[in-house]
Picture 1 (tube, helix red, strand yellow):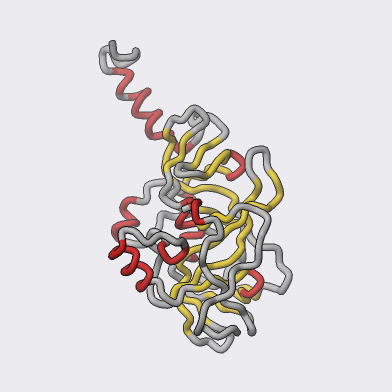
Picture 2 (cartoon, rainbow over the protein chains, first blue to last red; picture 1 turned 30 degrees about the vertical axis):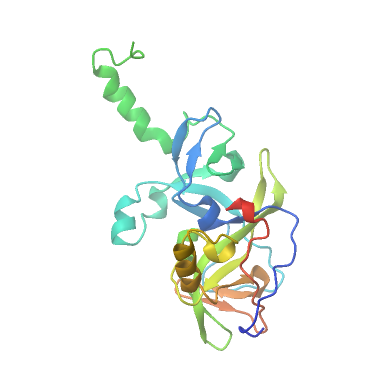
Length: 136
Length: 115
């Protein structure tokens, strides 16, 4: 183990772009390919490792498989997190760009992440007189 | 697994000594290429001995303004270090154990414009 005193050595150089989960991904807004807001990144799903299992040397590192979103306001305030099954997944293969916001390369319309907005639009707003066309 | 479960988890050395908590996870975009972006693979974990989580990342970049905020946050995250995936022996629900002879790396981000 290296000594904790003194300046620490820099991380060995890697070829790809560095992303820190909390700093660059969590809580960022997610926009679809038309720039329409879809949701925010509430958490991330990674491919491993298995819990409480010794990791053999040379094991391939886990990768991010999906951005997670869902009803996390309550758990943010009171602690814990919603069950995994209640979180909505946006597969990483749909992510096109990570900057100040996370941009998707697909339309947000068919994604599960925006189902509440679609439901409110179709079931409530559409039934209000004048609710089926743009305001003039 | 869900990454949020790992953040804040205590980190121990091979002898069971307490080193800090997982403040962040660092990924690098050099995994297998997909249609749009490469897959981000886990490079390592940022361990902070004095704080449960990272906030604004002042300890990882060269920002010094606002001065007071920068000083306070740097002090709060003092002693933070990065351990590479290769140095992680086991991840459990309540602790992360490192391998014997693990190396502490600086948490500084190489490209400071990213933040």
